[in-house]
Length: 285
Image (cartoon, rainbow, N blue to C red; front, side):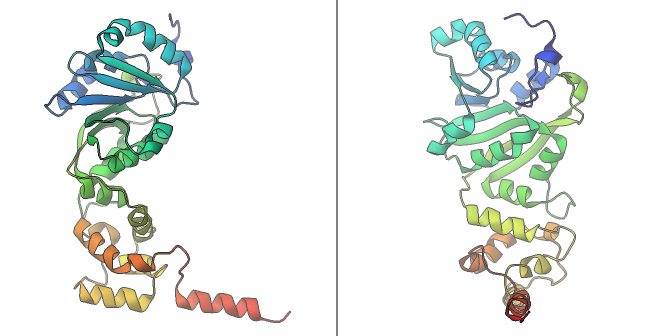
């Protein structure tokens, strides 16, 4: 397949920005864990990174764009024949419905479209076969996953990343390295997993805890849980009542969650607000 204008060829629907810098392609390869596990690549695009990956690993790639599937099938005919490369066409999220992306331990490597990057990473957190995640994402997203406690960027994503392992922002990539050039700076993020995290209730709890990041953690929690219970819990855990969400350690969030999770049914609201609601509903016209 001959592409005369790469910028026009890129699909906005699939959020395609093709990395065309050899320097960054090689830096991604160098950032990979040093072992012989298989690689799962999401969104191989034109195959520029894939060409480097198949030199050092067996690769299974997932591509949703049928045009690119045809291109990749032709471009990687030899690696496919030799068993070093396998291409799966379709939505990778549908594949993840069966819990694991591959049936064996693997490393995830990808230049992810911005609109789906966070969802992909969270799916990989749940996948027991996924041992590490090396992805190109929007810098802002990489910072949120890799932030340390007490940094203002520390978020629910930071807590989840620290829950499964260690997150590192490896390097930034300027827009000019892509065709077409995105409007934001990108970054390569490495998350080395020690375990997997598949608890949707914990994710829901973190959304409550970080709902208003600059307010007190206790106030955010009291939007869903009884204020008396929250205050008693803070006293029990010897937590500062003025603690902000970004100031609490990941271990602290797990302690709080374990105390509150039985009350996390999605329907509980502060008693004071429930009372006002009932008063409005019972007033006569």
